Figure 1 (cartoon, rainbow, N blue to C red):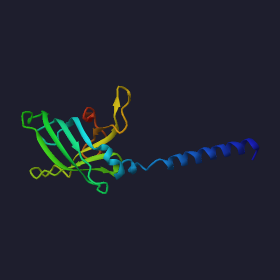
Figure 2: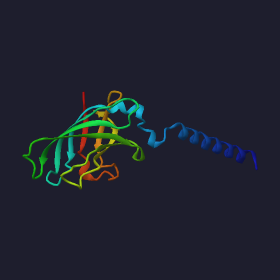
Figure 3: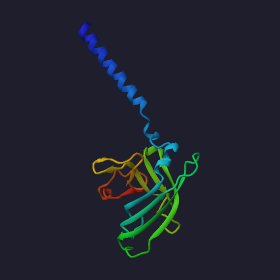
Figure 4: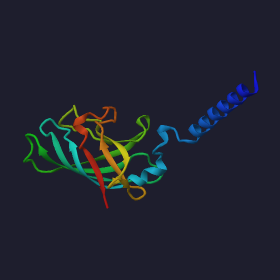
Length: 172
């Protein structure tokens, strides 16, 4: 092997090793929201969501996420929804509570757990949200500011177009 070929081989090998080391330094996708980081998501979020009942297409939502002790992996939420499109448009607001958590298989998927005793087709999760860093006028928002983008009920829906405007923004 001549000197130029050996140099090219060594450069290629060095680049491959550097790329592998950079990948190893990144957390695994399931480690995006370990329990010690989940307190960053606590707070109040408002916006629109696709309704989870048959008689309501779209709801105005007010979600409050609470974080328990550091050793807990399940946390509490309160979700108040008001139907703004569909047959239940004039119904009173509905408030539900339950447990939220991060689905480690779907990485940054925050799920709201809820089972409706009156509708066996609802549950065990009613909403799944991709956790995204909040954007403010094209620039990054303050540290630890996140939006919750609706993605079905368990973040496996592939973000269909009807969810494009279904997003909850943190209220400070």
